[in-house]
Image (cartoon, rainbow, N blue to C red; front, side, top):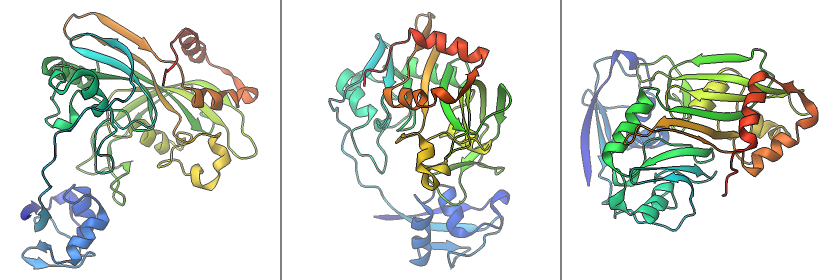
Length: 344
């Protein structure tokens, strides 16, 4: 069954194409879906049908037709292996394997971390602070092909406390990333707002638009590697998140012209020169350190996670090209020397 909804064009969106506006504002799932709806006469601007190239003005009234989503069956548990590092009555800390999606989406109905958490804990023993049954236990996320440490909550009080701690920057989340090019400075900060890409809804981008949200990432250089026949060198960095935007590190490193190695979305090297990807089939991004205060007990908890095999092998292949580690690199590798390796 279809419904008609209304959207008023803001001043910040004046001059945009109607299909781009509909997609970027999330009124349709993609720009192509929005274009199809416009062409089918399901979109009206100030009471008139328009072409998909129509340019909107501030204050325009857009009426658009959408189909009601079919009723969803309750999400079930699935016996998916989890590498759990800590668990009590309130929360879990786990090392997420690359390839595991955090929660169901249009492209992934099941086989997600939420399915695994339901199987392990029971749906009734997971927080529902995200407001949707398919987000049970989730308080923050890692991209499908980003590996490493993350949190899940069992009760709503703990879930809300963890989400607030993340917003207040009281949860220390650190990531190892190998990026293209040699970064000259030992430290850096990227303070650049992130929004949906104007052209592709599945991508994010640094943009100066009203929908953009604050995003801050700092990084420390750990090790630099000389350029080779098929690349312009590499830099291993320790990134710290101060905000938690979708694809944040990947977008910010691309913005600095140092995209994450192996990133199929934000790394222009990937299709042009596969050899520059060092044999990787996913982005070199790993959540290696997590520190926070337990919401229920107040205990300060700290966890480390060694690099998965594919990322270790990529680094090992660069060993002869190393320019040497920085002081920060010596510190991080000393910590990782005794860190448990991912089991999955």
